[in-house]
Image 1 (tube, one colour):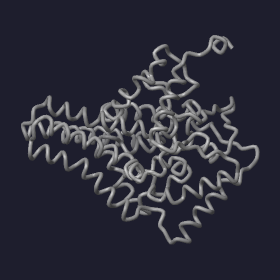
Image 2 (cartoon, helix red, strand yellow):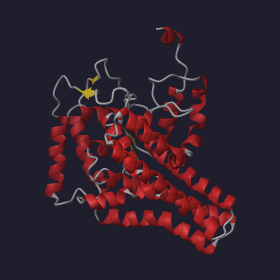
Image 3 (cartoon, rainbow, N blue to C red):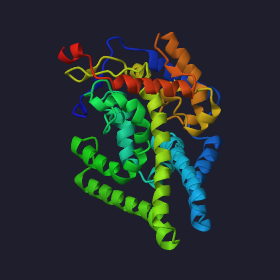
Image 4 (cartoon, rainbow, N blue to C red):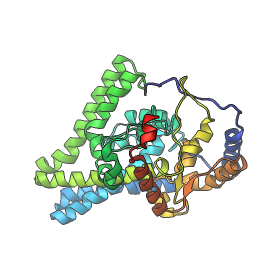
Amino acid sequence: MSHKGKIKFVSKDKSLFFPTLRKRVDAYFEENKVSKNANSTMIIKSVVLLACYIMPFLLLLALQPDLGISLMLWFVMGLGVAGIGMSIMHDANHGAYSNSKMVNDLMGYTLNLVGGSAFNWKLQHNILHHTYTNVVEMDEDIQDRLVLRFSPHTKVKFYHKLQWVYAFFFYGLLTLYWVVAKDFVQYALFKNNGVNANSKAQNRILLFKLVYTKVLYFALILAVPVVLFNIPLLEVLLGFFVMHFVAGIVLTVVFQLAHTVEGTSHPRPTENGIIENDWAIHQLNTTVNFSRKSKMISWYVGGLNFQIEHHLFPRICHVHYPAIAPIVKQTAEEFGIPYLENETFGQAVRSHIATLHRFGKLPDWNEAIG
C-alpha cells in the first residue's frame, strides 16, 4: 500500500462507456419506478439469514442436544454468518440497503454481530478493493496470505505449487482469523499507512469500541453457553470452529470466483503511480460474473455472482443486479469491452483452481534472470 493516494486511473482516450451505461441504468429505475435500495425480497432475505445465525444458537442453549445435532446447528450458523456477510452487511456498508444512513449503519453492524468490524471492512473493501481492484500494491484482498499467492506479481515460494490443493483448507480459517486477530492488525495497518484518516482521539475511541465489541462477541458466543448453560467447553469450541470453517470457505470461495480466475487482469501502476485505463473499464477487466442464471445462488450470495454490476454500481442493492446485468453486458459489447463470466458455479471453481495452479508455478529460469 505504499502507493496510497498516488495511484490514478488515466485513460488516453476519454471513455464514454461509463457515462452511457450510468444513464441507461438510471433510466431503467426511473422508467420502472423502482427504488435502487432494498425491496420486500431483500427484507425477507435479511430476516431469514439473521434467523439462520441466531435461532440455531438459541436452540443450542435451550435444548442442549447431543454432539451430532449440536454440530449441525453450528454448521447452519456458519451458513448464516456467510449469508449475513454477503447479503446484509455488504449492501448496508456500501450504503445500498437503504436511502437512510441510520438503517444502513444498523444493518451494517450485523458484521459486528458475527465478530467483525464494520469500520475496518469499509476501509479494506469500499476504499481499497473497489477502487484498486486486483492492483496488488493496494488491493489487500488479493495480497499474499501466509501460504497463498493471489497475484502474478508477488514472490513465488516453492510451496505455492501445491496451493491449488491446500487452499480450500486455509479458506476455512479466514473468518476465525478475522474475529481473533485481523481487525487489530488492520487497525494498526490502516492507521499507520493513512488509509484510516481519523484523528488520534477518534482512533482511541475506535480501538476501545473494537476491544469492547470483541469481548462482548466472545462472551456471548463462548462464555454464555459454558458458564450459564453448563455446555462442555470443548463442545462449544468445536462448534465455534465448525461455524467459522463453514463461513470462511463460503465467503472466500465466493469472493475468489470473482477476481482470482482465468481471464482477469492484474495491472501494475507505472513509476508515477498511473494505471493507463479508464476506472470503469478496469473493473470489467479485473472482475468476472458467475452463475447469473441460478436464482438459488444469486439469492444466497447476495448478488456477488454479479460482481461486474456490483463493482460498477456498489450503491445499488444487489436484488436489482439481475435486471441491470443485460444493460451492462449490452453496453460493454457496444464499446468493445469484454464482459467476463463463467456460466456455472462448477466452471467458476475450476477456473479458480486453474488460476491457483498457474500462480503457484515457479517462474521460468529465463524469466527469473530477465
